[in-house]
Picture 1 (tube, one colour):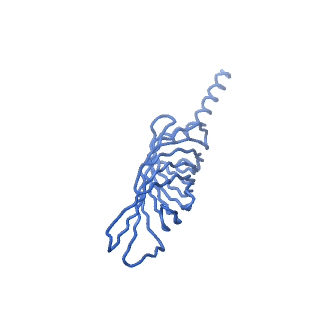
Picture 2: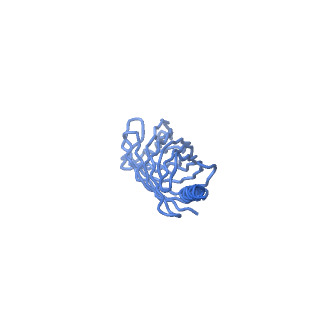
Picture 3: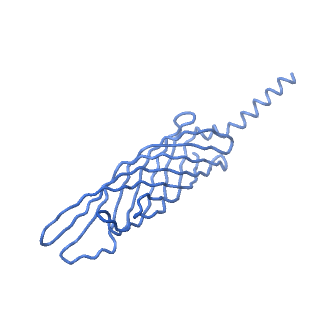
Amino acid sequence: MAQKGKYLAAVSAAFLFISPMNAQDTRSNLHINSGLSYMLTENIDSGFKTGFGFSFPLLKKTSVTFDFGYWKSSVHKEPKGLFNGTLSMAPFHVSLYYTLFENKNFMPYVFGGTGFIFTHFEIKDLITIPEVSIDQEVSNGISFHAGAGSLLKINQRLALYGEACFLLIKGDGITTFTDMNRGVSTENFSLNLDSFVFCLGIKYYL
């Protein structure tokens, strides 16, 4: 009887140890985050990133996350590229998250997915003659991403998390010249908008 009692106590302790995290895994959650977007192209500065989204469980260690983000970066003129200005980027990402292992309070994970990025570019400090105006646009496009992170449980409702993610983004730029004497002409060029994104956030479990 004593041996059975010890066995039952061990099983009960193990259940109590894992049940809080299992309960957390079966719940959807909302999240907000902020961080830094580090652009790999030298003439585009880093930007302060903010975002929000939600997740829901798919399998035992797998979940699906929808994330919306936004940041602005200063751009420095490059030959046959963008002029001085401000580039705004607003990604919408769908990701598959996989938990590597989990204990009562700590959970590292990896993730990857795809998304669509909305962009806007505004030229700054450009001086031209009155007869000529110049405008530039950056096309919206599809992106792919992969990263890793970890989550630290605060209580049954809240958790802190940190992530590092690589974004693969290829875009196109269009320069439009409007000359009152010669008409309108355009030039297309390729852009490398690849970037690393680092963020810290908080999750609220429903």
